[in-house]
Image 1: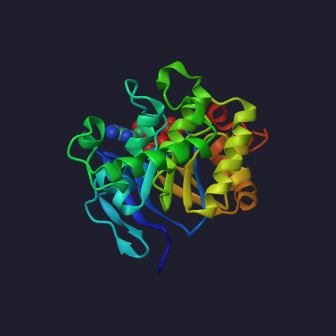
Image 2: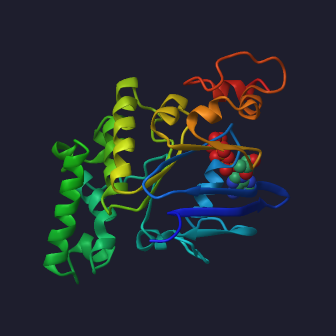
Length: 272
Ligand SMILES: Nc1ncnc2c1ncn2[C@@H]1O[C@H](COP(=O)(O)OP(=O)(O)OP(=O)(O)O)[C@@H](O)[C@H]1O
């Protein structure tokens, strides 16, 4: 396959008079983990929303393997091999864990979501295949024993794993992870780091995360945004040592804290 899993070229997004993204350019290579970081309001979520087809860029091009994505919508993502795990998890509270993950696996089948939920108009073979894929994903993420529970009855860390299983069940070529570490305990973050690193075996990950320790541990490259512009793009070590990144996080006055300390950026930004 030619080109990168995702190429973002000169992406510009405006909300009224506010330019949220200003000619943002970066690539997500095949089988890599790319971190997208930056202070609050830098434009990270807007990049995800543009890639997901939720917002339309004013200018610029998104490419998958060199081919431009034109006027795509969020429901096209499974067909494009892209999956997104939302920060708010987005699990359906009235459906069991297994059913939630089956929704993620459903694009693999020929029948639609209504067919899956009602059992009508759907080949039993499809139903079986979707169920098996969902069960395998739950097993892979260590939550098979929760299959018949409702998400709201489970601890947050377990719900996160369910949401990850749902995002991964289609074996996406590109997984968009929006702050997957938020709300997790330290041991859960370490486990998450292992999982994200392991995802490289199957596809690529674009990771938005404030938890710098995780970003530095799992990413092959890190793209840094500030006020809608890319101010750095390099390996974790290169980005960590970049004075422009330090300025963005710590502000111009003599900030002398640990630049990309695990829980530093948000507090540092507040002090600008
Ligand atoms: N739908 C919208 N309408 C108007 N302004 C918006 C909208 N979405 C985002 N913005 C603005 O665009 C800029 C970038 O926001 P975005 O949410 O992408 O930043 P972020 O880096 O994800 O921030 P955070 O780390 O706080 O989630 C901000 O100034 C934000 O207020």
